[in-house]
Length: 464
Image (cartoon, rainbow, N blue to C red; front, side, top):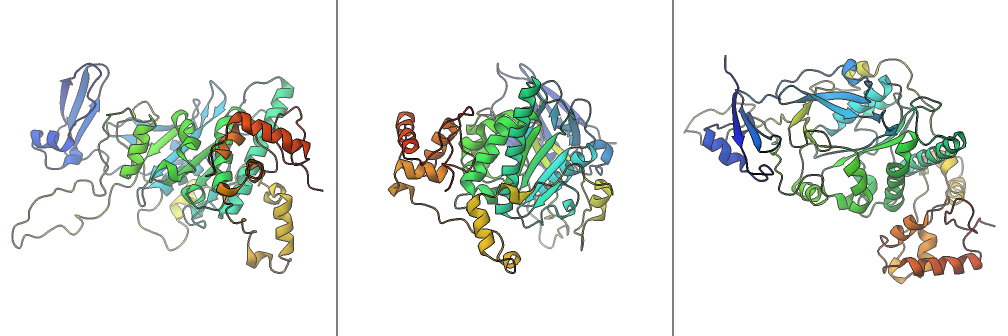
């Protein structure tokens, strides 16, 4: 029986920041690069292991027991190469915080199956989920009927996110009245999550609701966690600037749960630049085909039929875990081959019981303008016409600061710091804090903005 070879290396102070994985494999005379695992240890030590076969191949199927949240607020999604559990935190019982999460991966890397596992975990653990599946419901179709709210369009996603922000604000007021500074699990409110799959469609440049979507996700990531309202996004591994602007997500990612499946080079550069991966730290690449050996075939030598079959789905790095540079893999979620309908294995994982929580009333979070637009369609044509179309993107370069303020403000207002950030992200000329305050004072005098109240929010004047 083949054994694992292990080499303990002494490293320079601070550890190895750069290494050539291919050169290391050549030195060890190993043709299959995926069999060699390099891991930086503590202090001046590193470990190189050579496995007889890649240890992450042939992982078992996931179970509901794996996905039940434990006493530390974690679920088990899979395994590291050495058999240690890959855990993902949904709740921190020490601080009472819900979590902020992000899952990145290229097409076919296993992102949607990982999202399915998180959704099953939430249902099994009594966590309320409001889900946006922006691939028209195709990414996680089995989630239909398994979550409190499920939407499939960008406009509905905005309404859902508005509802989550409103729920977080309701809890803040209620907990303040109770003299409570944090969230207590289930007393009186349930742990709640907004999950946006294919979030890049909502937040990419040119998307009709990009600005408001980014602001709402930022607000949930910043204030929702302390009242038990978390946010998780899943997106293509492109570039963070395509996700509402890197500033929107930078703080959220550094403090949340971040998983990186097979990636693109642009995503890697951004993650390094934003400090999620130490500069110079090396992640072993995740190839499409694990175990593939590049070598010249002799004349008439037959190739294996499956030598180019993609088989690395679910391989990942948990960048904010305790082992950010150690490769892991999710357990198998659902059927291996595509199904002609809903996947029966995934449906069995969800179970037949009703999901926790109540559906968000989307219409309750429409603005007066949106309600009017929806009413103008007529009852007979509403379903065919769909939600009201967004207004054309304004040309901020030719707008006054007052016009830009009115364009940036949602109906329920913004804090001053968030309004300033929105103005300086709308493509117009830079706005200074003093200039913005002077403009706001003049707009209040003209009745364009509401007078300030105890909340301190800047709010548009109510319509006549």
